[in-house]
Image (cartoon, one colour):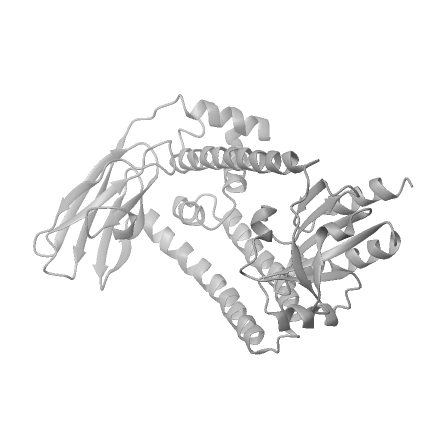
Length: 390
């Protein structure tokens, strides 16, 4: 199926359908407004917009018309200029009429059937989303009112519950999408709140569109979704390139001397990294506020005991007060070495720390052997490879 989708996406870039008119008829409640401005998205190039166009307003009324072959988003602005002036993002659908009312700065869309479908989808999604947001606001209130020692545990509870509740929201939206594949308005609205690739796949399977050589260009929403997917693919490639660049930086650190530093340990005495030469040392950049750092503590303890004496862990607390740092070390009973890293320290910069937790393995000669960002199982696999053979 994925191969077929990719073929159709490529075909869509070479197929052009006849353009059809879309008309906006609108009113605005501000009598001083003489002009509005609109930037129409480029067909087939999601994320890119055509040059701004001016719309004349007379006695609070305005009209705008253009021709399109597929659905595109458009920015409606009160003033000419950058994105800061955007009042709303609207969708322009070929062969449709959009009645737009601007009241107290809010844009209300109505008009032909497709826009009524969008409004119905918005009501459905808003009700589901408001339930999740209400729960989350209550959970945050509980977190902020808790004691500092209880916050890490509550944070993890919220994280786990949020994953379950958001999963339920996602399923509800997916079910609604599957029930409304014949509704262009529903699909257009949900494209901002749903899995676009799954939506495209469902649309492809509907009525066996996979055997239609003109799909997706023959389907106005299918063409729009294919444009969005191409944008998603391009963004993924960019992110992969950035990840490769970041990984190359990490790889380049291997074998290089670890920058030396001196920080205050948990007993109030200075501890210098180079004083630990002669054994493997794992620098653990963490914080009591970091949910993933706390979540990884049980595995850290297990491996510290599993390979006892073969390496030392030096916890480097970041972005905490000294009180929170010491309380967290005591609460989670962390048996390894600890130092406090104040805001004035350059240690994070020296080691190019970009995320938490970050674990840096330093060999007995003081050189960097491995850098792992995040709570990644690969770290423990590496320790088994390094120490399990001895």
